[in-house]
Length: 164
Length: 148
Image 1 (cartoon, rainbow over the protein chains, first blue to last red):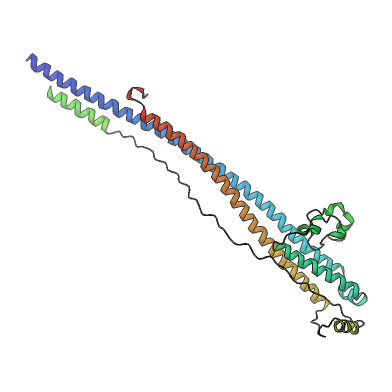
Image 2 (tube, rainbow over the protein chains, first blue to last red):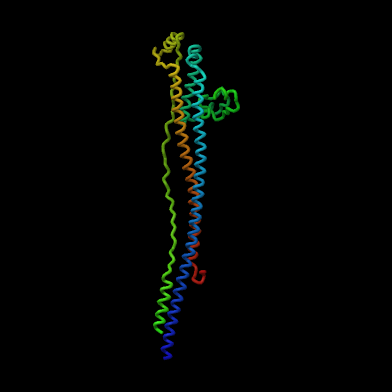
């Protein structure tokens, strides 16, 4: 009877021990997984944060590009408006009758300048003269914003007023 | 007694077996697009155009000029309004080209800068991934008695 009881107790103890060991290892595994999960969640948060920063940078860049684009559009608009204003200020028909040689010279110069503007828009390099031009008499009046980067029209208010 | 043992074992198994811990898997793999390589447009090299202003008084003089310069005695004419329209049309075409060029440059700059920002974000994420992998490896290599 005593031996039987001892045997049962031994089996019971072994079973309890096994159960304890299994419970312990299972818990440890779960803990390891939870630690790894926490680390991965941290990565996910950091990646989301990085993505947010990247998006913010993209929006900032977009705003910057829009601003530059608007400036370029305004520059193109101003150039076109200048020509229209110039043509509306002068009656070239009347001038052509009264001063044919002068008008011929003016429109030939203007055409030459306008064609040069088209070349510059297509990517042609600026010449040394164009680069160094800083006075109204040296510039390409048709597109000085593109052709003469060193010309500052605000330094010549009278000229600017006449050529708006 | 035996029943008690069996019930205890089965009960323990049932209680602990019901709960599971799933491993969280997060994978991030940025896809790299190949860079777009395009040829540049041709640069214009335009020929000079010569304008003649002709009125009632100088018409003979202009014919003479053409003759002296060995040019064909013919002119293709525009009225002053026609000339103005041509000048404005050319100017509008130029404006369009300028605008298109500005848009292309804006696209290029935007995507290049955005690419740079994304690269930085990816590299940051890579660094974090590496450090987490290291933590995981360290955890995996820990002995049972070191786990807490």
